[in-house]
Amino acid sequence: MKLAARISRISVSKTMAVMEAALRLREQGIDVVDFGPGEPDFPTPENIKQAGIRAIQNDFTKYTAIGGIKELKKAIVEKHAGDFGSKYDVSECIVNFGGKHALFNVFSAVVEEGDDVIIPTPYWVTFADIARFVNSNPIFVHTREADGFRLTAELLGPSLTPRTRLVVVNSPNNPSGAVLDNDEFVRIARLCSDRDIFVVSDECYSHFLYDGRKPFSIGGHQELKNHVIIAGSVSKTYAMTGWRIGYVLAAPEIIQAVIKLQSHSTSNPTSISQKAALEALTGPQDSVGKMLAEYAKRRDFVLNRLRAIPGVRCAEPGGAFYAYPNISAAFGRGSIRDSVDFSARLLEKAHVAVTPGEAFGTTDHVRISYATSMEQLDKGIGRIREFMEFL
Image 1 (spheres, rainbow, N blue to C red):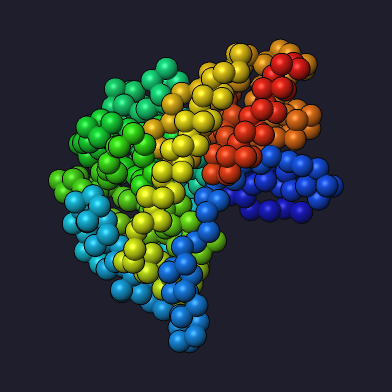
Image 2: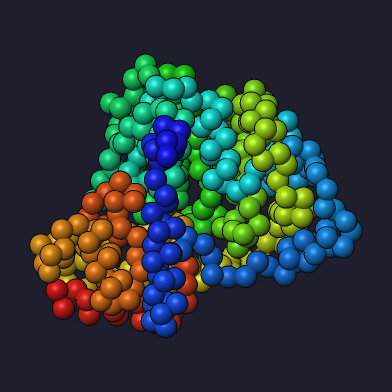
């Protein structure tokens, strides 16, 4: 059967493939430690759940405005202003079906066929596939493990050409947990602004930073506003992954273009989820700090345990909830050639699910999500150590 060429340019998300492989083993009764999922293991806070219930009880179940209800857009811009010092108007905001949908709409609205899209590695799997779907050219800028996988203007500069339309920045980063230096982020954005290039800042993990570091958004720099596009989400910050609410903050022309596209694809985000997100942004914020404190403890535990395994190196994540260890010491042992082989054998022999680095544009690493219990982390990393010793 002949399908559209645009579908052949993309692949099924490799992170979803890991989840499905782990699920198949579980269905066979096997005890699998799953380090694949990129979502909080905490429940959605009670006040947010109750807001969703009230929306149903109050029959708030009809269509809303395509770009989201005004109260939610107002809450988004006010929360962003309070957290980051930005100055967006409600007309510069649109609500989407999660952060992934926000990014897909942005790429579709601003990137032409044949444009170059700069994506630093390691990168979240979907960035490259969205770029390919809109028939642009993903250009990968390789950050260095020795530098903690942090992008710099010096690294980025040589990749910028007259064909460059968009630079993607994800800080804190999925999969590495890397966090850009604030001043360096500004230098990157100014470099792009001077060349009339858009910067898309994926702020999905913006509130999960360690060692007392404060959240930062390039959207707080007004002089760069016309070349900065913010893609955000309530999914990770408030443990609301299944509610599917994301947003875009950008110049009004970009927002109107995204509204036009959304009007013919999904129409409005789910009305009930919008009310829940409104409560998340305007209600008590104590759940965020509690999750961050727990993630910090897990990060330290995971780092110490991984670094104690002979042959394993791991850059320290400054944010998010992932570790990205280098497991290349295992290559050449027991028919393991790369991180794909390593991940497959680890799941088969040790029943631990990790995501291979090939999914994120590197060859020597695997991603471990520590958005799971300390008990599972202890068990899983113990199995990884035994697996490495077996090899």
